[in-house]
Length: 222
Image (cartoon, rainbow, N blue to C red):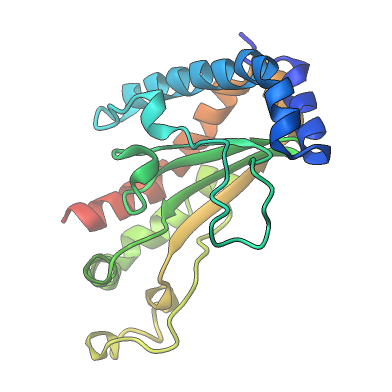
């Protein structure tokens, strides 16, 4: 089934030109009907599909969906609304910045999909690095998985210029140890937003991330 009508995309196209409270209030019923409600239903369906593969995912849609209102307190850009809907399906939902999850955003120009470790704390980062140093062959195998490589390509993330002395013997051999973040990303064509194939296609992308997702989950659960 298709979750979104053409008006999902049209709403955000118009919002980009009219990003103010007056316009939004005039179009609030339209937002509730064609954006908020179907997005909630879509995320609920995707959570159920992911739970069938990973029973540790027991969150509800409300735990995963980000608000459309922007936090403008410290931003030069004072436009009040985000021009997309987004959600993070992870053990702790949208507030979970560490456990590898499945983040996505439905924009007017396409669908962005992301996963991995984004906000590891200092001790967690050390834990991940030690796990990589001790289990690099497993990581290499996960990164070379045909589905992961085809969909996501490789790992991204900011890097440290210097590593703790613990890694002196292996830092040249395993350059990923310098990473502070370990995330992957992919794009889906905008045509899928209004397609009845959307949920299945997104679930395919989730499954493609599994080898790397599970590797970093194991690193943090160790």
